[in-house]
Length: 366
Image 1: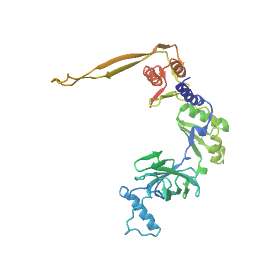
Image 2: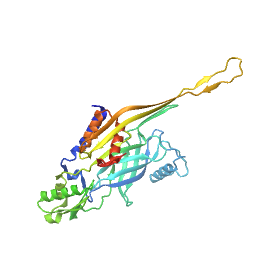
Image 3: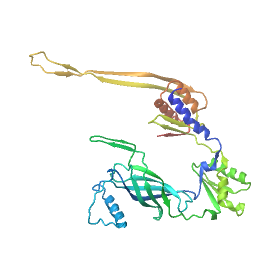
Image 4: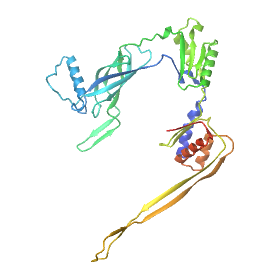
């Protein structure tokens, strides 16, 4: 078994396992239970001469001057050119039901011409949400996965040293006003909308509770009416629903990547009766010019005579391979690999079978 067949077999395994029962929490989300994006503009200090150049990043000087003035240092009349500071954009996600005082992770990225953020420390930076309110404040030492080595005439960079993260680097200062306990109607949103899967979720919830509290609204939404259960905390209802197991319906889909030669397919992909013929045509053109020089003491000139060799070679491929009746695509791929078909040619064959209307699945090319 060559490496491509092994990789293909490993890629098929997840699609086979998707038909097994899974928890609702793994294929759907609950309306309102989501995170909120935060963003801030801050300053990193303590860099080893790899910060922003003030000439190309004047905003760094402005924020540095504003920071020092808030700390009681007047730098209005004294121009300074620090090389160990850098302006950065700080991003984070406020998780659902985050309370004041809890800590969240933040990501830091340089926006100026700083060469590296290694060894830097983020100064206290407020993080705003889409409504313009401050929900968290970030500060701390930056961890960067990049590395940099600089000499007199060479510079080597590994990874991206201008980005980094601060684990638990932000503290929540404001809570999102969302009263989940007062909700009487909940909605389940499927990550991959499908009418069959949504109907199975509805049936599984009603069977588990013994009463019709779930109602199918569309292919991606199932409504839950918790008032049928009486005075019950919606959080307890969600905690019970999200662990109910259902069998999701998988869409027949084939995804191919021309760059890496990767093919991912589902087990329910079928191929109708079709005949396939494939071969490789190789054209080679070689230029071997010959230089003709005149005899000594003659009046002739040196002339370059072109010599071109052109040949066309057709490498052996597969003949007419006919598929009798309907079969699975995995069997077709296994048979083509047994014939020694290369990954690139295999992708072209599958694309041609789909164009002929014999491949019954959604065909995605990346």
